[in-house]
Length: 264
Length: 264
DNA sequence: TCTAAATATGCATAAAACAGCGGTTCCCCC
DNA sequence: GGGGGAACCGCTGTTTTATGCATATTTAGA
Image 1 (spheres, rainbow over the protein chains, first blue to last red):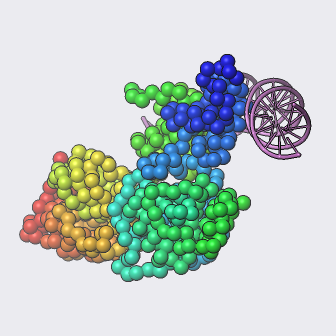
Image 2 (image 1 turned 180 degrees about the vertical axis):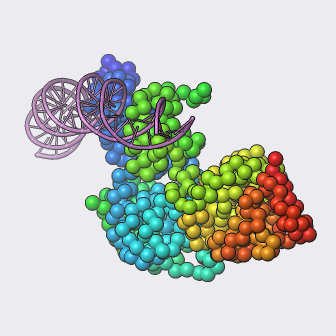
Image 3 (image 1 turned 180 degrees about the horizontal axis):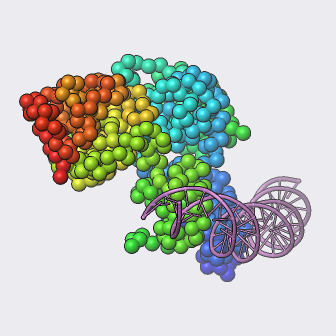
């Protein structure tokens, strides 16, 4: 409408951009405020937020939305990552559990996804687990493992992991059945990526140490690339996710012989 | 006294994030404080905490919640040791602190005494710390160290330590200024002893890696011998305790050129 | 042991979300 | 120029959620 000064750009996309900018600035938005600001109904705002939430650009809540720091360079508080997309990660963890058998040797890296997996392993028995996460030993059900090894190295306070070489545990080399890896992004051009540079090399070692590699990734990771490259896609065997990737990425994964399991 | 007024916390999710941030900062929260801070009823806070607890993001307690990092694994017999002779161990830790200077490299083994020491290091700066305890990184004041290394190895659930060779950290050998060691017993006949067999060899390696060894031991340890022998008394330099040992042991220690510091 | 505080449970209320409907606008293509 | 369709928007009634309050119960601490 020509009578409106600022809001004449009635395009929804414009409103979405403005909305994200505001969110970045304030950390949270309420439907009520936005409705007044843009002079549209609450329903419209609600629909906008739903769309943005389904794109993983914000976290929808009762009454509005809150920001989720998806900066590529990850100084985002770990607890925040633990508290976003909780239901997706839980479902992924439960699906991944079924891929593991009693008595296997697992390597787990230290991310929020692998933590959820660790807490879901209660049904299994006699696992041997190797990890660089200091949180996993605390939450891992003690009934599921017979041996648990922690990889030594420099401690990263934010991620609560150690970073170092993994070639040896107890002074001798190891081979594992399965590496279960949480990553920062999965994209066609960059492959697997993560936010912490030093961690990338460590994760690659984990992949090479294991006969089979399972990557845990919610669908928001698809198409995203963090700055530290871990490995090309063909180095992994399986991706467990909550929603199938877009056809283009799916095709590339198929060509690379990477299986995809979508958690129900 | 709440220096940080939370202004617009209309959204529950925002409150949850803020709450987790506070928790990470303070380690523990009370329902009462949070209720005042966010200006909502205690019931609401209680429900929030329940949700976050069910997501595995914190540990619920009577009256509030604690961070998972600070959680000393529920019902380990280790907790009993943490809660016995508390005042003695605190005094010992404070006295031992004064023996450490800024910028030193410390090796700490994983016992209740060294944990108390770790929590008292807040005044120091630029330490490099090497430990096999998974609890120490969680309680160590982040202001005191510039680097923190965790020794890898097999995880002992009860003591929350790793057991393995310490010769390498990040693939290269190390030398430390000071090893601070908590032991199970100090006796004339058996020297230094501990309860976990595998740990004994590891502690001896720590002692040999450091130029100086300080043993933390409350007076109940004197004359007691656990079954795993660590080293003879002459291998250490100092004992920090809360009460002087009996003359006979004191004489042997003097002959072995071991200094004794009695915490006031 | 005893007492005060904290929790659990049920309920009431207001706000927000959801689902469906109809109107409008814009664009594409005939 | 003019359908036809798709997207956008606001409205209405119903359902869900968040919150606070009252009561009974449990817990922690003196």
